[in-house]
Length: 224
Image 1: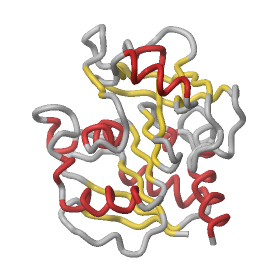
Image 2 (image 1 turned 90 degrees about the horizontal axis):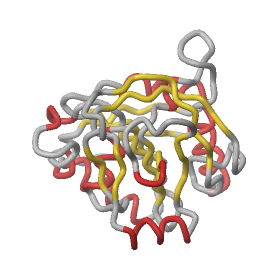
Image 3 (image 1 turned 120 degrees about the vertical axis):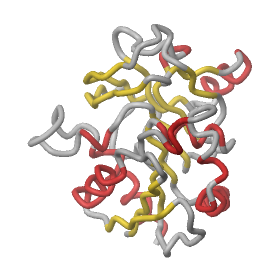
Image 4 (image 1 turned 90 degrees about the vertical axis):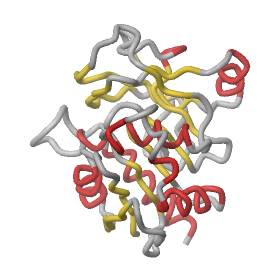
């Protein structure tokens, strides 16, 4: 199974995401922001970093990258797409996910290991987990506060589209402690913390993040 990882100018975690795919048992394929060729991949990851320097709003410029035209079309056709941190911001700017990410409420960059509670284990990227399972993955962001109007928040809650919540102190002021959400179909997921940094015992806080990548591979196998 081929999972593409898009590199934008300013991406920091693209190689880490590729490594996570490989450790999970998939084939990582590098995709360039300026191209319009998905190279036959079965899923796509938008990695963390500071795409285009995070000028304007985070992810606002990346939304218009030629590669994103292809990603949006593929997502609407059902291709699994995961946005991590800056990738989550890009998914919101591209209107593949509702809401927006704004500056942390304490106005400081946060970098720490973070406990998450899995709320939805039926998406293309979370099927390896169980509802209510708590995992530990790194978190690093300056604009990670998830916001939406009350009607949208109630919709996400009512439809079970909150993927994960922060456990303990809210690290960035995200409304209702939301750390990640999914689209209605469950193929597109945005997550602010970094599961790609928790896929092997040698580095990071264990392997709790690996399930996001094994989930995608399992989902793809089921569709073959």
